[in-house]
Image (cartoon, rainbow, N blue to C red; front, side):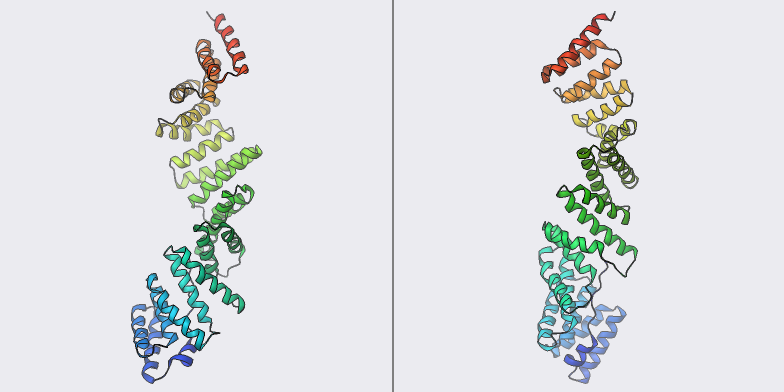
Length: 372
């Protein structure tokens, strides 16, 4: 996240801090060191100041900023809280009050203390909104994600919707990835609520902004497949398969094979489904569902011998699986192995009691009787 921590204002030193020329010298040295990026040395200067002047709000403010810059986030809140208390008495309209709340909130967020991040970030946004000052986009992002991680999805959704439409002067690659990540979180909320139309739109944006975001690609493919099942849409199945192929280019593992195999099956691209489903089945030798999908892909792509083997394994694992028995019976029937087909169809009828299956048994029995 691109963090923009507000700088302490030089006016603080003039209004609040400078009581003696020695303190002025310490202040100027501390500010110069901070601006050079020597945060440890700057910290020491400001700590010396507050030893002499505990009411020096600007020095407390800089101490908090130095700790933040040194990534010692657990040490940020105490000095900045002192700064806020003093500023609210000495200079309540100072923009540094909001800046201190911002830095405290971001520090909690970066420590994954999301519940602690909420109040300071909300205060920062409220103060700047009231003063009609610009709000740093990273504050809304951190607040929205904190709500998301706390599973407070209503609050997260409204903020994320703002962040993904917010114009930013920063067009850097990092900012683009931040936007993509926010689109992912928004899409995840829609996905949890089974609002696939909006989930798909948000997740497409996430993948567009960060083509290597495997979590966004996974969720986009799942949302597309769920929408495809509900609407019987071939286009959605095909798009899910396209997303799966992009995912495989980044991460070729079993989770990706599962997505690709199911997407190609749904799209009736059976030959393309074989490879990922074989990978999944052979990695899960006791998973009847995996072997069933693999067997169906083989069967429907005309690879009957391999289909027989896969489906025989399926019914060993799940003896009463009607889809597996029906598919295997069909495979044997297509290969004109009527005795074998009869054996399988009889099992299917015994397991289902389906009158249509009984009719199939009678038909295949007649064909078997005619074979020499």
